[in-house]
Image (cartoon, rainbow, N blue to C red; front, side, top):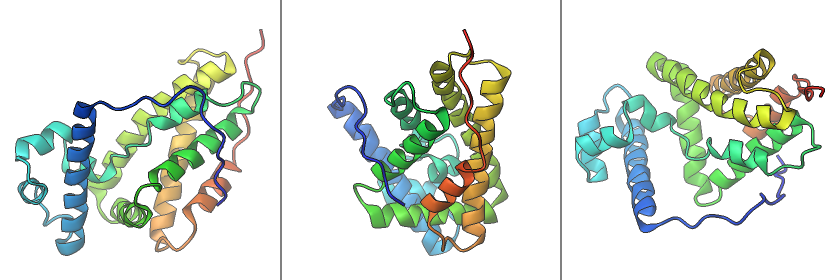
Length: 212
């Protein structure tokens, strides 16, 4: 998939030492979790084992991730979609802004360690298919992302965040993204995920602005 490279408005904020340490700890916990799951399976992997592998305490794991499912599902780049949409041209159709923001967030996720990120995406999709607890938690997580998307879409269309059309459109998009991930996992993650997302978004129409 071709990734757009239009810059986001405004300078990038530099992370402080405390924020960098938090991100480093989160990444260590996630990497330990993925490694253990690949070695022994999801059900056999405990929070205590994850903490030991990541060289932190179990309480630290729970401070960053309320449940084991959250560790494998948390995506550092999901919240960026809202900010990325705000950086798009005001006259751009909302659906195309959503498409661009998802593409750009994916591109950013794969910048640092693309091979590792690909492995995590594949494992995440497989777990969503095979483990009911992960599938259920993923639905909850995407609902939270959907509410963030509501804010961005409301701003772009001149509608209220709680408008029925805004809520239905945003949550429909999130539901579609969930089904795309599951479809990808069910088919062995052989397809290009970016192309599947494009096909998914092609099934939607643009949400028009509210007339003055």
